[in-house]
Image (cartoon, rainbow, N blue to C red; front, side):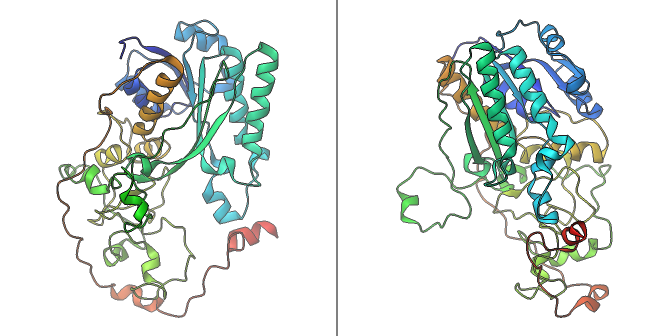
Length: 413
């Protein structure tokens, strides 16, 4: 592959998850804009050559972005960004039954992203978001993006054609059960073919005959990602606190609070699905991790199988970040990594963009790929439920269904 770098404009850059992957593929971030001060410190600490603008995107003109990048309109090879996604998140649907979506002021970030596309006219645009952006019947966000691209094409004579797909990241070697929506469009209207999965999804039966006829690898597990790491330093406080902390040791690897419902093998302390999925959620060595959360409460996982919070190094590994330093306290670090995109995914997409649109092919192994561990230890031994929780044993009702829980009903009233 050529040593040439392909200049990139990065919007909503966060801690750099998208950018590090694209960098590994061969792109060069010229300018990054981010409003979170801790994330900006992280970017500057790890990539001092990047021009980092600490501001709200609506307060920065596209001409300022181009000037900071040392580019003129049309010279950027790629514009990339993951606009904040809370109005379209799955958790919003679960807790409230619906969300405001385009009526939510936070959805205006989609307009701002497209404003910069129209002003800078990159050769390729890549937008990342939550899978909920394209939920059937609730796809106002994606329709807004399509309309914006049509307007840009009419105004500038471009041919941006959206190519969209929800990718299950675990199917590409990322050790995390995380789904993300990606939109990629080329200025000349060329089709983008998303790469095919390389790994088996853990929910795919291993005795499926089709599996043996394919070249799919086994999913990358949490042990593959973090099993080799040294124990976290004592100064990094990873103690689980709060009302439910002492219940965590009684939950097996790979389970959550549902273990302690009538449908599972524990003690019936809760009703089925009456809590958020991440409540007392624990990693399993032999399975991929669940999604790293940006703002978990005291009892929201995923937790380590040793009944503690994940260290910064462990979260970095599960996010397939390169060797970088995340700046800030525990809350700031968690927020930056939980809001990020696993970098290996954008290295994979970046290579495909270079191959399909720029004619460059790289056959070497992925820079950020993880190697499977040679062996995996057995699961940790369980402890009994402590006496202080036994008064909760009873006949607990199941959750009534999406949009019918207490929060949703209260909002409806």
